[in-house]
Length: 429
View 1 (cartoon, rainbow, N blue to C red):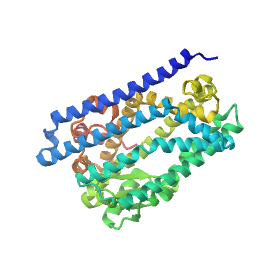
View 2 (cartoon, rainbow, N blue to C red; view 1 turned 120 degrees about the horizontal axis):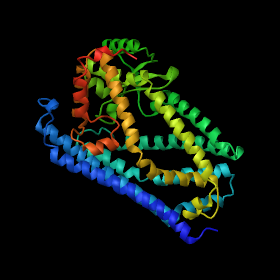
View 3 (cartoon, one colour; view 1 turned 45 degrees about the vertical axis):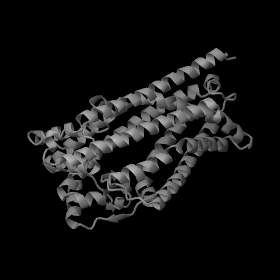
View 4 (cartoon, rainbow, N blue to C red; view 1 turned 60 degrees about the vertical axis):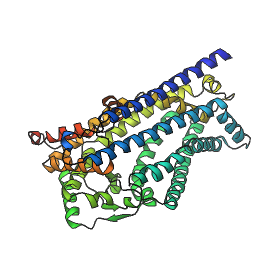
């Protein structure tokens, strides 16, 4: 039998790690805000003559506003999760579901879905405020309340369908393969990831946006020429009606196999030159050509295999359940509790994933310069994107090291400008 002291120790250990992660996140965000306040009035050398004082103030204020709201949202989410744990709400939800006397697979799926919905509702008021207050104040938001509600309903339905199917298969594998479920779940997880990557551009994305073939023949031919030069075949070039929601601009390369496609935001096409758009897409093609997607998938699968085996070893431990107030051992509850335990631990690994991502971004930048023969168009595109999206030009170095998936913009541009001389000696992958 576990003593009260043992249970209190294990719960206290989790709470200590959770609190440490929460405090560190707040401190890092505060550090970044103070750094921006001190330097936000300075125009970096590479942006002199490109942005004026008024635009720089808007860039600073936008970052300050979004950072404050993100801090409050993260803190609120953490406090609500702690309330759910300490109040025994998760235990109560499980008791209500157990009273229905459903099959374990159905009970587990329902438990996950209900708990996920409760924890996810905290995002709704913040999303409303972010879109209809901050984004509107800085002239980004084009959303109507009707469209926002429509997106919310669609997102919930898609999430419930996808998550419901995923959980049903996962819990079925656990039910029928008691000793080796961790391996079968891992294989299923790999197949599921690939399936979603294939389906997203042709099934899920069209539920939210309209995708039309690019009509500009010059732009289309330039993009196809660059894609052909890189050795990548794409199924189509599409213009997405992103402008009906936001003035933010972007582009992306998505899909696998025959669903591979290049997607350009209409806001990007309307505000950038052909050379700039081609440079941005060359960067995205670099990720695929240099195997970044494949490497990230392999890393994800390696981590998930280790994680699933560890979960298999821990999920039957009475300590895990008793520490969170559960008096019964059910694998679906154990898996849910492990996702909660892993959350603060994963936070401390953020710098590792950030560093790997920045390394890939630098490689993709280099590939784009080699493919197009000049870094100037990509530099011009990045500066224009920063101006349009009101990006932070003065992130705190430690904050950027911890969180940034891309190199800080000023340093990134400095590196790109130095690629014109000598980089052509490096052969294309």
